[in-house]
Length: 246
Image (cartoon, rainbow, N blue to C red; front, side, top):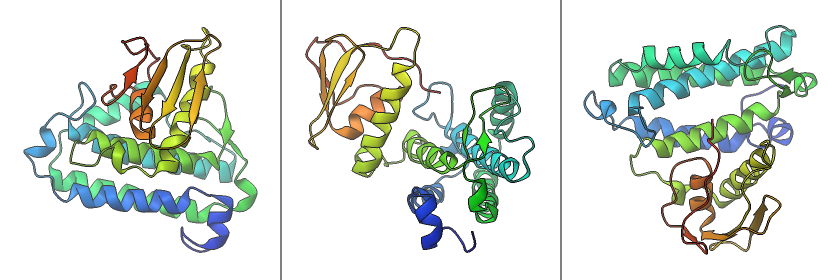
């Protein structure tokens, strides 16, 4: 598998690759507007400043690159050594200057692109995991995971980029991902019907009847990843409680 991301052969086997490149370009451009004062301001995520978010995305890029290298070598095919080390790295890097954060964001993306470029088609189905001992998934899924990280955390920066700016296909795919994840909860997840108001789509969550929740696909996805239910209406009046998104 040769060439840089965006090559037709690569996008055939990694269908989220071009979208990940576009999303990252938007994100890196947004960082140019941050200074040392604004980067310390709160993000959408409770307890995290914008600097925490930028640091997390940089370390996530390195984590995915590490897993891709592991997929090639067959050793240490995981993203993070542990949840604790992941959290510590974010906290340690969240007190740097805006210039250092931007440089780290760009450099970590270059490293991830190189790891993607080095990935051979024979290794796309190699098993990787988030941390050692957790359930494995194919290496090819890492690209879609990265796209989700960039899109969601770009919106978390609260710099004017919101779920309303997400491509509709990304919104519906994120709703479907959360639908699957919630179904895997021991309780089977909350029961409800999600009804998109901007596209002709609806999703059933849980096994019971449950209320109907209405909103755009982006608003539904934003709520399902734990960012609040702004713009949504619920037939029961109050939105159901959903599980935390990691």
